Length: 189
Image 1 (cartoon, helix red, strand yellow):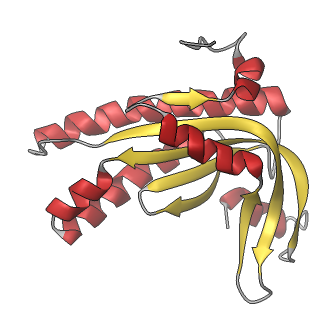
Image 2: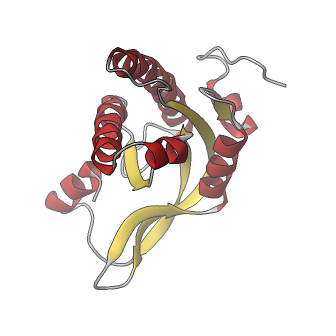
């Protein structure tokens, strides 16, 4: 469970039952560029060490911005804002985009470290962000469930990430409209 959900359960504010609620969520999907190529060339132990180090750094960034890590999917990560706590759609969107910028900066730091360790082609990341309605809650079965988001916008964040260039954060128009007065966005059309 995400730490926020575990804390809500401990306080009696949430339960471990199946089901969810419709919420306005800002979703970020991030993927490591060319990780498959890296994994095919490196020893499995090195691949695991790099991935764990990377996710440790990115998790610290997520927690610093109060995001919820939905899941790690291979070398990708799904994060959302707006549940279990929310500061409103605008503030959640600003927090998510700010977090993505911070993640990109941390990747630059990691690349410098990896270069100093002799990694010829350090890893890069690309991200997609959107804001919209998703169902959030426990989905699965009574014996195995995940606290996750389901909906069009979760899928759209993944598609935006796929369309992003290396080290780019591609945001949807819905997110742009929420953050445009607080975060400078390049290439908005």
